[in-house]
Amino acid sequence: MPVTSQPPGRRERNKQEKLDRITAAATELFAEYGVEDVTTQQIADKADIGTGTLFLYAKTKGELLLLVQNANYAEALQRGRADAETIRDALGAVMAVVRPIVECNRTQIDNGRFYLREMVFGDPTEPHHSAALSIVGQTEEAIAAILDRDELGGVVDAATTARIISAIMFVSMAASVNAGLEIEALVQDIRAQISLLIPR
Image (cartoon, rainbow, N blue to C red):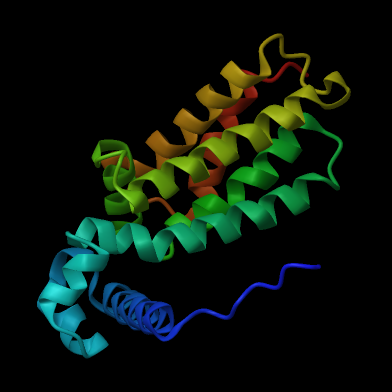
């Protein structure tokens, strides 16, 4: 007899509805004002919930930003992976993965830099931080797969090289000195650094 999954109960639907309202409120306020200038009280008010309820879903603004941005970064990575599949040149394929992540990070520069700080320095056991680190791991896996395929990159240790490439990308996006760079200039700077790691 086949097992049919039950639709979520009222409690689960209510929790998901609140999470959706929190995410929508945080997304809108962070985009409009930047994470530094938004309070958790403003997010709770916009989501039409109490701050106590808000803290059940995320304890800090950093966790709220992770909640909002993780979905955007995962979607950017998915786009990059799809684009990379059509490019045979290893450097070009790696940059196809990198570019949408950079674009995602630069949608609101201060939020993007705040997100990266939270990702690196936040509590890795907290679910939103854990999800962000998972996206970093998936990014590195995507890059390693490119370097491994048909030995395109000529790289001896694809996983280690992918970690270095990931570090270059994230440090370049987070660095204060690059805060004023346009997307294309930042992408080209990352490409110049990565090109030293991938034999031609």
